[in-house]
Length: 529
Ligand code: NAP
Image (cartoon, rainbow, N blue to C red; front, side, top):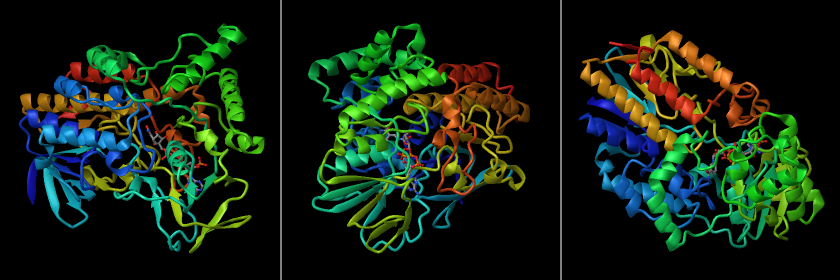
């Protein structure tokens, strides 16, 4: 059995950066990656139209000033192939491949007193003192639970398992099931070439314009000059984006001022309309109704057939209480003669057939079916590995009623296991959180090396206190009253039908402050041996 100081599961952004930091500690590290290349989310999600929803330059790694100057993003919101090229460039620069094993799907990880023993799908095993999960909050993709799904004779794909060679939709009859952020990006792209596109929408989402465009040379210079200042800003904002909530409340301004502010946000690029809105937009139901009404009017003005417009306006949740899909002429797609919208709540899909699918109302024939049906978020990737800690304790069982962590990075009963982007870490602009978590884990390991310590585990009372804080942060959020991956709901997964406090809803600065306090206090919240 091969022995390492640390095993990292996953070669996405968090696994890649953790490898770089652990090498600096002189550790012998092995990264186990199920795919054939680095990139994680950006390796797997190759569906047409996949691109950033946060500004490209705010998304890249910030730790290497040379790389920041060398790499030029082509668009304000870069498409997936460019992001994957960027991550490959990082891997090449740091020669990451020599410590990464590809095609290495981890099936189990068992702690046995002094080491983690990790078994791959091919039966081979590796051992290491430390186990670092870099498996992503949105990586365990889920197909819908629809009868007959195996029987379709044509090509069908989940968006997170898209064929590398791409798909030609020209003249084809295409179905897209699902209208989350992924479905929206897919639909607006497929509609350009498909012979006929049928969209099966169960719940409409509130979408807002991305306003993407190429970065000019002048902007490129400014972006590169401004990197330190921009990352400083991201470190201060609630969710690490360049946007942050407006300090005013919705009703402290006049109706005219409010409308003008909404118009300004709607015309601006990126997440500003969501995370840069009035600060009470997602806590005060009346404030939320106001912005929801504004977006509903926009949808009505962009969709010609008012019956279709009404179908596209969410009725069971307010704007921003689920992830807002960013769009580029998404609503106009429904004005095209080759596109049809089907309400899958009114007429549910009953089965997938050899030639298409049947709803409660009609039979449809398709050449291609696309499942944009999302992920078992936050804890799904953990559930898919048989992780056992002290005395054979199963993580799946320990978390059966919801994850329990200390700052999302440690779990009681699982010594020397550190989770990057585990449940209850600050999310938002993900790479900003990744860099913080990776550096926190590296600092802990440096501390352990310096003090000759070999085992670290969260203390039960510290987990209890963190969980109380996680609960407290979530009080009063309208998002808690809505089914989505934010609240741990996935109708396609057994046991994920009821809402939980599945994520950390406090601010990223508050999250980091708590983590830094733990480190500054000599890790008293951890049992170190
Ligand atoms: P999602 O938001 O969970 O959406 C899944 C969609 O599939 C929903 O519309 C859901 O309907 C539908 N669905 C699932 N099962 C179905 C069934 N049996 N029949 C009919 N419809 C079904 O997943 P996602 O769109 O992949 O997005 C997940 C997250 O990934 C996003 O929230 C975002 O955080 C991230 N993402 C980011 C980017 C970016 O930054 N560029 C792009 C894409 C995704 P219901 O709503 O009714 O369940």
